[in-house]
Amino acid sequence: MLRISNRTTAEEVRWVLCGRLAGPWVGELRSNWDQVREWSRDRRHVIDLSDVTSIDERGEALLGELKDEGAEFLARGVYTRHLLENLKG
Image (tube, one colour):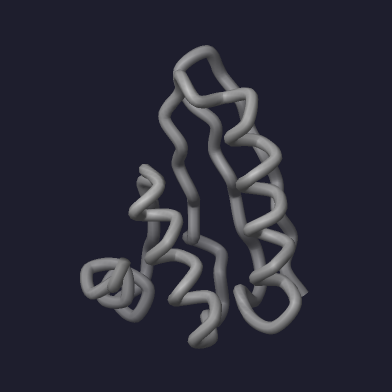
């Protein structure tokens, strides 16, 4: 299960993820990203992974795509920070 919350200010849109970025939830994040990006191109786009408990291969691939599309990431935990440093996009 993955909970996706959006927080919007004049400067940024933030996606706060809680749970597992895996399986069908990868598609949910992609869909949410695409919808929100449509109307928020002039803002920073930040994805907060601080409360993500696991990320599968599809989740990693999506994070690489989002990085290429301009996403910035927040993370805590050695594993998640290491994964973000080594994203392929």
